[in-house]
Length: 138
Image (cartoon, rainbow, N blue to C red; front, side, top):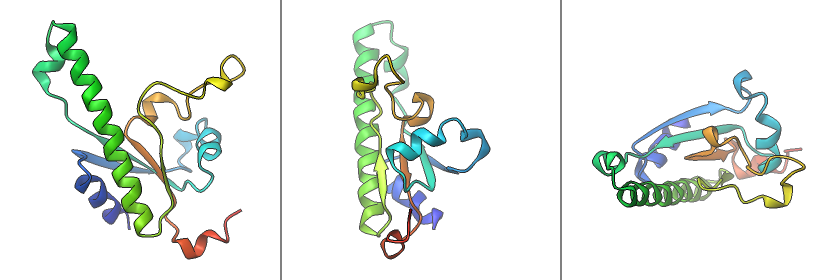
């Protein structure tokens, strides 16, 4: 199944892709936040996009900034395409935005990002169960 999901990511425009089960011990501190955002999460997809190297290295801030912004928009687009492809096959999925945290109603009382930013960029949370199995979830 994951090979198929990897193919979805590459077809959606990702340059590389990897997967991790949400139960992996290294994700222990993030698991409650991941489950809060999408209780059906079973695995995480992480993918990367290449940036134009010389644009990022440019001493002209406007050039580098534009590259970061365009690539960030593309990351969100790729994540959305992966999510849509998974949903078309009956796999529930959620993609969190790459950009600035928007859960500002949580400010001061708790963190305002859904999943730690180093984990959230280019990530899609998904359940490997088909729709027919979803009714059995807690």
